[in-house]
Length: 451
Picture 1 (cartoon, one colour):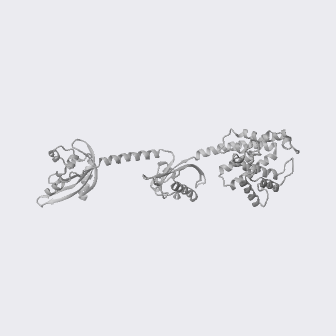
Picture 2 (cartoon, helix red, strand yellow):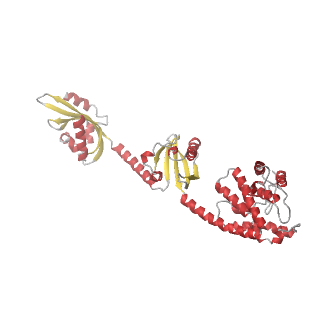
Picture 3 (cartoon, helix red, strand yellow):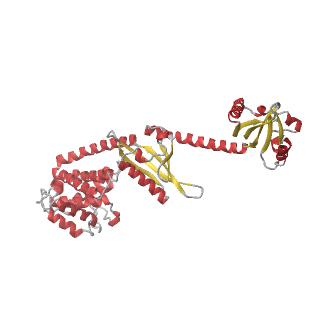
């Protein structure tokens, strides 16, 4: 039996795996091995190899104790990994799979350990390198003050960073495998799901999307989100990665700053009202009309705020024009008319250096321009006129012609609508004209801004 095993081992020198038979009793020693094991243990002679005890191979006594405890319990160890210290003092990672074998007679019982030993140093070094890279990446992700998350193709969360966990107020294990529908209101989760699918299906990232969300307690948060596709080695999309930054504090600060600025501008509006109530009332009505049109176009609240504010302030430049010219009942002279026209430039100059989240100064500057170039002050045409200014132009004409002025009676909404219809596509944006007609018709043909 012994000779047969020795013969089988000695014929396996080219496997690259150490094979051994080790006597556990009556005397502990290696009784058979292939040359691969001898080299692995760093032995230079058979005598040196014969002196080795199995327990001496373990560089850590805890690994040794665990190895023999497992063997005593199960009579077998499977791929037991430990750091082996060879005869030259070099440490190498090895894995042992072995079984306890009993033989001999009752008078001379014997126990052996038969198994294999594999040098897994290269594998361990690679594993350690990958572990270091994973730890480095996780450390990097955890120190970024943004919520970072990875999802599979079913939009299930597969990995998140520390900031995401803290923000969700959940445990890490309660997040993994879930979707946005488990954490957010249905409408909000639906939008997130659609964005994920857009990235998955198109391969195009979504960069810097600003979202404003209502929280369960009635407060709101504002975030900016970027989502990119993740690929496998073959270039196939396997999921998405998202980065979301909480901008609520910044947004609140900007909102407060904007409110302060708007309140300051409203003081100027009050000054105009005290001096010229007709122009002030006209501005308020134009703001209402413009906002109604903007909502019909499906604009977001920030853009609606911009057009409403432009309506309220678009004629503020008239505060510098003498009242006897503004309210003159007869025909204006060319000089008087040029003074009236200057209110646009004066209003533009008033706002051009003030920072707004929308192009307020340019909206006001263009509100007397016409598609055919017949407007003023720059005679802009077609696409050179921004959409907000086209809305203001139509709102201005609609309100002015429909309302009473000190120098004339109200012409009425019918004449105002006729003017817009005749100029549709020529002077006025046809889409906006159609929207105005729909709104007026829904209000039984009456001025809806007076409701």
